[in-house]
Length: 350
Image (cartoon, rainbow, N blue to C red; front, side, top):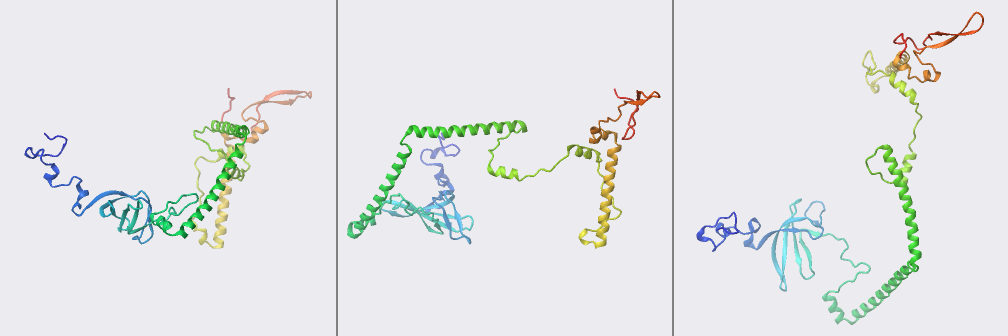
């Protein structure tokens, strides 16, 4: 019976007396224990703090939390606590980095290949209580002057801390001396802000409905108003633009030139004058062609602003008043001559 050692065969004569690893001559940790004879075990080490690599040509920082395959080895003892060293290789420059444990100060110490990044955490901050070391306690016990200096510094610090605490208490009492008034002030400010928020939300929803926007719009800022005020929209005649666009041919014909001229930067003054005159002539010819087509094309005449403004509808007959021999006006239906050329059909549309 193989038991729970699935996947590893143990002969029946050795079953229960030894393991598959011993029979195969392998370590239970596999490749991680290839240097176990030297007391080295390969582990996954995570950088406890940021360090500067001193082997790289340029200063390179290794951030906190970066993981390495490190060789763990026991290098000493602090009383009965072992001291371990973790040696790893920087993959950028290939240099070795060694970090050791410090049981005395419960910390890690960089011993080779790098130095710890100074972030100011070791300095005493305002309001922070610093714990004295054993050497400082022993010096205070043996040196009366050092103990006196420490007492004076502690008294000054106590006075400073007391005044700061009293200021904080007075400020808090001033703010909440009348809880009802303070609550009413906060509620009034919140109510005004709520109305502004509701108004902005209504405007935003209306804009999204008009523009059919399926995205969330941010609130308008002063910078947005300034940039919008700098935009200048020119005058635009919609009817003239529509007529001009319809009069343009569907497939544009490039400007025809009899010969290919060199670039203007390489032309002489005379050649430049000839080229400019040729371009002006071609633009004038194209504009005349577009205007002629806009007048003669029957499908464009109804869209001309002049025809609509004058009240004349092309292709529609109207009665014209004529004067008889007796001088009286007699209405006679006669076809009106078209001002814009012949129409496509000679009969009325139903």
